[in-house]
Image 1: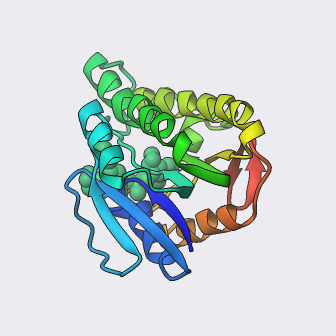
Image 2 (image 1 turned 60 degrees about the vertical axis):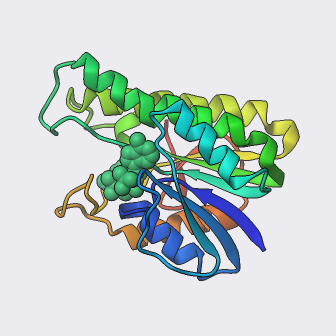
Length: 218
Ligand SMILES: NC(=O)c1ccc[n+]([C@@H]2O[C@H](COP(=O)([O-])OP(=O)(O)OC[C@H]3O[C@@H](n4cnc5c(N)ncnc54)[C@H](OP(=O)(O)O)[C@@H]3O)[C@@H](O)[C@H]2O)c1
């Protein structure tokens, strides 16, 4: 049985992905800041993890006790600004980077030694973190910077882990109906969960940015 970690599974894309993957013969370790998740299945455990606190990351690593993993989906993320905000708020910038970038990197680096051969890391980023967006605008600056930096981490880590046969990908879910995306979004979390599952089972080439089953521009 394969084992994977999915962060941020109390709701939204993370919850839908855990629900889908636990129907396969896979053991999933999920996380939320409270340690709670509405899913109850024998092959699923949820742990407390706050990515903005190093102590919480260290406690999570201790809790899972050197467990060997086949994949890590860095899904947890925050969007603090209103969608029409373009001004930089340094406090929001730091909080956003603490979760979406620094905490995500700290967790990933601490888990690298836990990977089995042919492991996979998927960093959930966003079209809002892309440099090639055709409809680029000045809004959501903190979130966009955090996701573009995470995309660069994907590329760097993919190169670094080449010899260890660990595949590292960025993944753009598209605009999705969640607390973050709102109810007008075009995609459902269950659709995105299927894309994540397909990416995991497709053994993709490392170091790319994926959207709806295809490589997209950074
Ligand atoms: N929805 C969209 O349209 C969209 C588009 C592009 C990319 N994305 C990306 O997709 C991922 C999932 O988004 P979503 O829409 O499903 O968001 P969501 O519904 O807001 O869920 C976010 C998840 O992240 C967790 N989380 C929040 N702060 C955390 C922290 N400090 N430490 C650890 N976990 C924390 C939350 O757990 P708690 O319940 O404990 O707070 C929750 O489970 C994010 O990385 C997001 O940036 C979303």
